[in-house]
Structure formats: C-alpha cells, structure tokens
Image (tube, rainbow, N blue to C red; front, side, top):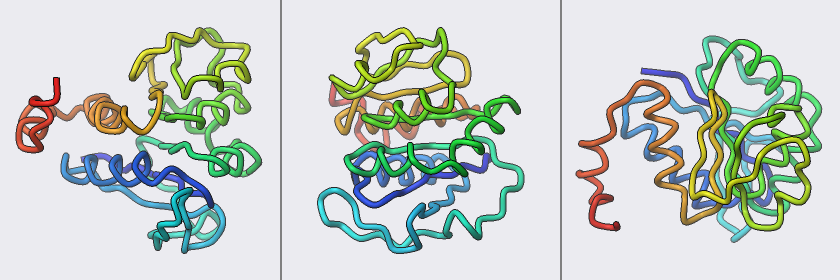
Length: 182
C-alpha cells in the first residue's frame, strides 16, 4: 500500500483526476487529493470537488507518488506554482514516481524532469517541451516518470501508476471490465 498525492487545480480535467484517484484507491493505495487553489476545486467541465487537503497545509510524509491531471487552465495553474515545482524536483531526486497526463507534462518540463525521457501528452503540448522524447503513445513510462496523452488514457494511466507502485492490476482490470475494451 503506497501513499499517492493527486494535485487538483482550478480547471483540472475531471476524468483524468478522478478516474486516477478511484482506480488507485481500488488498488489499495492511500490517495490524498490536494487542492492547489484551496480545498474546493472546480474542474474544466464545472464539476466541483472538495479535496482532502490544501497545498499549504498538506503534511508531506512518506509519499510514494505525485500525480498531475491535465486540463486547461488546470495544467497552467500547476506549472505556475513554484512550491509544487520544488516538491516535484525534491521527490524526483528521492526516486519517487511522478506522473502527469494530458497537458500536465508541461509541469514536468518546467521542473526539469523530462530531460532525455520518453513522454507523451495531449497533441500540441509536445511543442512546449523541448528536452524530452515525445512518443505520442497512449501512456509512456520511462523510469519513474509516467505520462498519459489525455482523458481517454486515464484508466491505463492509473493502472500504470498502480503497477509502478508494485500492484498486480490484472484482477482490478477484469473486475472493472477493462479487458473488454480492447
């Protein structure tokens, strides 16, 4: 059982954020939702979510993975948060899993975490990232960095995070009928 933080900022993509939280919790992990802009965060499709905590008051102990959903302007808000950028750098140096989906790999780029790393993102955002290797895949894992291309990749993105945390997701995939999609 790992401790995972999913950061939510105003304008986050609800499917990417909440599907990831749901799947990781189903996999048995402790998932903390942390609001960047307060504790009630409204997504890009006007769904409001009350987070477990706020960035300013969150207790940073024994975290195994940091997750960034995309969405606009959510990914921009994440990228502009200097405190979050420092935490991403710090936890990357500690060898923790860092995951970003859709537009959020631009946050990893600002933190300098995509240098020579394979990554994917929502089409067009690769133009803002000049230090990684864009693949265009549904989900990409390069070492401890996991990226996804958008909302449709949310399930595979979350399963990939769970597997990187040591979870066998085969029963979960079957129970959620995921194996019938492909």
